[in-house]
Amino acid sequence: MEKFEGGRTVLEGETAHHLGRVLRAEPGTLYELSDGERVWLGRVEKIGRSRVEFALVEQLSAQAPSFSLTLLLAVVKFDRFEWALEKATELGVAAIVPLAAARSEKALLKATPKRAERWKKILLEASQQSRRVRVPSLEAVTNPEIAFGACQEAVRLLLSERADAPSLRRILPGMYSKRAVLAVGPEGGWTGAEVAAANKAGFQEVSLGKLILRTETAVAASLAALNYALGEE
Image (cartoon, rainbow, N blue to C red; front, top):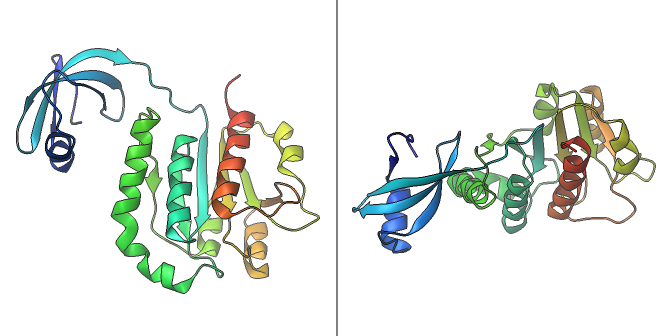
């Protein structure tokens, strides 16, 4: 939405076209609307070809996370990667950085530029579904070493398959920062060079246990744990 003012707002462009022509919205239908700062319940008043006018009915509560999470996520098969994007959004991440990890499939990496708009749409729809005020940012695909070095968050965690890596469960009680970054690797795990680069950048290796999880499962499990540790009581 552009803005909420005077008890009315207007939705234009592709989203308006989709709402009117594909979803067959009708006058009187209620929708939740966000301008990036607030969420309102709006009633459809008038529908045009690429324009939908709403009357604002009531402002809804919308919770912004009390902490900031950045997810560094290795590119994996797109159906699994996109599932992870959706769930990461629902779990409150502020930013997502796709990684061209050494063990990411090269054919997938070549195809990522064509998926950017689809990924942004997934983030938008997941944000709307979970009543988030702001959509997480999606950065360009980058190399892990560059992404690790750019992180300034107080808590930097690298999910690891090493048997001697400390469990996330042991780390969580000592976490008091409101800013954290989590790096999740591809199937097959991180290479030794990537682990070394992460350690040099201040990342701590952590484990989710003895079971080997798929990338998307690890994302959901670890973010849920971080929400529990960093969220408000």
